[in-house]
Length: 601
Image 1 (cartoon, rainbow, N blue to C red):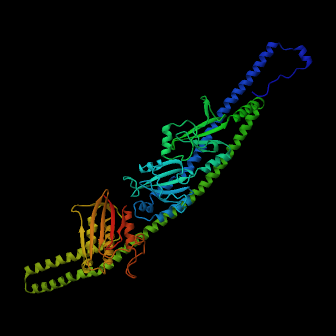
Image 2: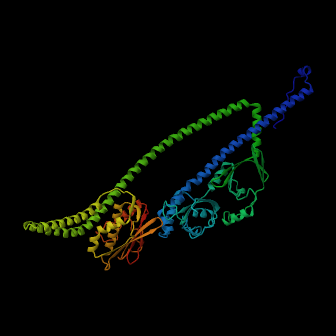
Image 3: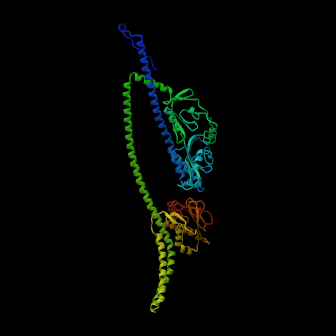
């Protein structure tokens, strides 16, 4: 209650004349004591209220800091799960070496503790620490971790644990990987995981001089600026809880003791006593993680603040209030200045971002225009290669028309009207046939924008075969079409798909130049939600090791001067724009098999 209150002594002359009665003095002492005690109670209540508000503000700040430290890495698992190299790795179609380098680079740039990829059994296929033989995650199985099970169930996973391999703690965030990007209907084929090191937060809490710790759903403290409390339990752990922790190896090698802890308080405040040290306590539930953030203030700090309130409120209350108002005004002014500066910086940042967005849009438009020009150039190149066959096909009808015309002159001179009409009808049929041939070339060469809609996949295949019919005949190549009798509806652009199949069939024909038995087989296969058209030839096949390069622009296996190396690259890009894909299914002799996959319409 502070120092004792004393009544100053009266001068002797006054005491002699005005001596106070004992009962009145006693009542005055009681009033003074009541005033002091009331001031103490008010100061105590005010202190607890202020501390509670401060604690709530600090808890909000620490929650934001903790969530920010985790959220800035949350995008990594999702981003890598959409990566084509990762999907091909988990599908068994890519070398883990390249993916290891991707993970290592991404981990270094992001500043995370580790990045790794697991298959559907929990085995780690690639990791950012693949080059460290002592702590590499590669080939280790972490299927026992809850974050793996959550991701395989199609959800994002999160789990704080001590590393089973490295022995260093961290927060693991996982995301499922699906065989087709953007398609979440099937079972995941693997899991991408990022490990985040939160030791920097603990150091920040320790250096800040405030007592903060985070406990998990079991009541175990796993983040704390107070080292002695780390991996201690707030409440006694049940046998079932301990069993769950051991199964997930969450705190492997740690003895989970229970803190000597006592709780108490009222509706206005709560306190906690740990190892005979008393604290003011406030907690905040982090429901997203199933954690609790705890903030403690030593109890002796509260008593000191209460006494300070008592002294100042008794002697300098008004001055203290003025000082508080002055400090508050300065603080608000400083905050206002900081907000103004932040708004100015944000404005400059928005302008810079807008310029970058405009530049990107211009670049995308230029790339789109360039791609359209490449597609049209590829069409014209294919038309040039088919020109000889078309000329050959038109020669015979032209010769027939010439012969029929001569006959018509002769019949007209002999007045054979009936035979003349028949001959003219034959000429008309021949010209219709010639028109159909030229119309095919005109439709194929026409420059049209990409329009994805529901079409019959058989039509572009048949059209491409018809365009190359005489080229195939001149090369003495047998074309086998294995198509369903009914329509096969897919999402695509008929004219662009004609170009794709012309490129693939022409490539197969070029590959069989030195082959005796030339045969190209087109087969339709329907799967869950997709249609696959396979083009197989009897050529020498593609050399091992070229599978990763075959769709690269300007890469070709043909002799110099016989190709630009753009056909497969353009075809692959066209099919990707239709949400499909082209893959080289086989690269071994005899022959090569290309597969075009399209979504069902």
